[in-house]
Length: 572
Image (cartoon, rainbow, N blue to C red; front, side, top):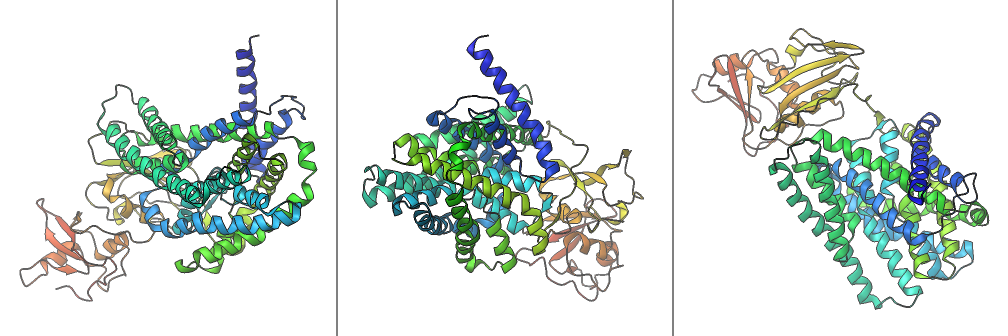
C-alpha cells in the first residue's frame, strides 16, 4: 500500500470511530470532545494504535483550520438579534474577563508548578479563554434551551475571545524568547488582531451575502460550497493582514446567516457537518499529539491549576466583567461554570513549542490535563448545574421532517418547522383560533408517525411538528406563538398586517403579546365598524383600516409606538 492509501485508511478508521463514539458520549452524558480526545490517545504512540505523531507545527495548522470551520458554523447559527442583545456583556467577558482569568490562573500556576511568573502567566493566557468548539458542542448536545440573553452571551463570548487569547499567548511567548517589540509592539498586535479581524470578517460577510443572493448557480448544492469559500477568504484575508482569522470567520458567518436568503437550510446542514468533521479531526489529532506518560507527571499541579481556574479565576472574572449588565447571581454562576476549555488552549499551547520556549513541553502537558478536567467536570455536569440553578428548560426534540425550498431566491419568505412545547401559546389551540395574518399558513403537521394536512379545526398538541409558511419579516411574531420563552419582538414602524375581520382582539393580543383586553371577544370588523368619528380606530400601538379585499382588516403599527402599550378599555 502506498503512503497515501495508508493515510486515507487510518484517517477513515479514526473518523468512523470518532463518529461512533459520539453516540457513546451522548448515552454517558459526556461531551463528545472527551471521547474524541480519548480515541486519539488510544490511537497514539503510547496507545494500542501506536501511531507516532509529534509534529506540533502541522498540528497547529490543522488545528487552526478545524477551529475556523467550527467558528464559521457557530457564526452561521448566531443571529444578528442575539449579537445586538449580548455584545456588551460578551465583549466584556471576551476582553476584561479573559485578562482577569489569565492573570489569576497564571499567578497560581507559577506557584503550583514552581516556575517563573512569566511562564505561569503564559500558561494562564493559554487557558484563559472560553473555547468555542467546546461551548458550541456542549450547548447543542446538552438537551437544554437556555434563556436567549444567556445563550447569546455564551456563544458570542466564546466566538469572539480568541483574539485576546492569541494576543496574550503570542505576546508572552515573544517576551520569553526576547522578541516582544516593547509595549507598542504588543498594543499593535492586539489592535491588528481585533480591528483587522472584525473588518475582514465584515467585508467578506457583506460581499459574500451579496454574491450568494445574486449568483445564479445551476446546482443548489453549490451554494454551501460558495458560502464555505467566502469563509475561507475571510480567514485567509484577515490572517494575511495580521488580524485574527478566527474572529473574521465568526463575524462573516453571522453576516451571511443574516443576509443570505437562498438555500438556507442546505447551507446550515452542510456547515453543521463540516463543524462536526472539524471537531472530530481536531480532538482526535490533539489526542494523538499527547503522551499519557508525560501528562501523568503533572497531574497534581495540573489539578491545582484546574481547580483555581474553574472555581476561583473564572467566577471572579465573570462577576467583575458582568457587574454593569444586570445578570442575576444564578446567571453569573452559570456563566462561570460554562467557561469550558477545549481545542483552543491545546492549539495555543503549540505556539511556545514551535517558538522554542524552554520548558514549553511541561506547559503543553499541563494545558492538556487542564482541558480534560474542564471538559469532564464542566461539560458533563452542565445540565445538572442548570437544573440546580433553575436556568433553562429541556430543549424541544428535533423535528423528524424538514423542508427545503431552494427556489425561494426572489421571494421574501420561508417555511419554518416548529415543535409545539407544552407551555406554548398554540398548545391545545385550533388553527383557526391563532389568527395568523395574511401571508402566513400552517402547511403541514407531523404527529408521531402520522402526517396531518392541517385544517382550521386541527388542534395542535404538545410534541407536534408544525411547518408554517410565512413572509420572512413575520417570523419573530410567529416564533413567539410556539416558543414559550420568547418575548414580544421589536415591531418596525409602519408594519402593516392583514387579518380576517372575524379575528378577535383577544386573538390579536395573543399574536402580538399584549395584555389581554377587556373587549377580547370583539372582532376587528366590529372594532372598525364601531368608529363614529370617521378616523381609523386606535388599538394601543395599532391603527385599524379597511383592506382592499372585503372581510379583511389592515392592522398597522404606529410609528414610534411601544408594542407594550395597553389596549383601550372600550372600542371607539
